[in-house]
Structures are given as C-alpha cells and as structure tokens.
Image (cartoon, rainbow, N blue to C red; front, side, top):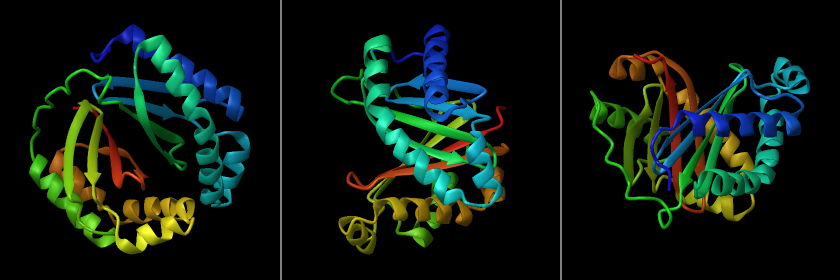
Length: 232
C-alpha cells in the first residue's frame, strides 16, 4: 500500500481523473491536485464547469447541476476505485465529493479500506485545533446535532479534513428511509455552508479559506468537511 506523497504517482492519478471527467462531462478540469496520506486520497479540481452547466449556474439552477453530477459520479466511482487499486495499489472503500459551482471547483475524497491500508499515520496537531472543532460543533448543533465524534487533520498545507461521526437526527434518518436521500444531501450541503461564518474559521486557522466542501454517507452516519485554504 502506497501511503506517502509521490509526485509521479500523484501526477498519474491527476491525469487519469482529468481525462475521465473530460470524456464523461465534455470538459475536464484545467487543474487537478492529488494528495495521498493514509487513509485519505484527496483530489481537488479547478476550473471544472461544462458549457451546459455554465448556463444552468448562470440561471442559479445549482441543484440541477449537482443532481446530474452526483448521478454521474455514482456511475464513475466503481471505475475510479478499480483504476486506483490496479494502477496505484490504493484500496478505496468510500468516496465523498462536493462542488463549488460558483468557483468552478470540486473535490473527491477517497477513504481507504482499513483492512488493506497500512497502520494509520499519526497526524500532528495544529494551532487552535480544539477551537476549530468547538466552532464546528456549534455549526453542527444548529444544522442537525453535535457529532458523537469529531477529528480534524491537515492532509497537506492546503487541505484540511474534518471527520464527523454520529451526526444525523432521527428525523433525517426517517427521511432517508423514506427515499429522500438526494434531496436531503443537497439541502444539508447548502445549509451547512450558509451557517459557517468563514471569517471566524479563518481567524481561528490564520489562513484564507478558498473553498468549503461537505459530503455524507448517511448509512454509515459519517460526514467529511474539507476546507481548501491558502497555503502558508
């Protein structure tokens, strides 16, 4: 299992992802940034917006674009997992993804299979980690409920990941059982991003935040929130 940053490997994965998206969306991202740090593989996309999507975004029809992209990614994820397993010996169990349509950016976050990955690396603490997590708990409490577990880690100098477990309310669980998963995830993405006061988060971290992404696995009751920041 390869867990250390490898520029050649990262470049190979970036090229594959860029071509795959271009072949399936008609236009791929201009830039793809890959970071591998067990148990995560982060893929950050820049300047990714197809012509028809640009038209829908101009009409403020964000949900239609996100719904289409989510459906497309559901089809592509098995292929991406298989490619990374064969070409890079990366065994991805789950992928999480989200988009910032106005910024024309997106992120895919792969979480490796614990049975296949090496022993998880110890991630160093960073300045104001506890304050950051306290602020995130406040947002979570307003949007749904405080998570049973919360941890935050820097994958690199531009990517901060926050993992939350046990975050769904009983009402949300009932909506999921009733088949409202896609509408719920679109609404929760919008709500959480609106509730986050980025100035507070920037003050805590001492960086400028470029992008915020969030996704859930409702059946595992886990969420990943990714902040893309200006490198120090």
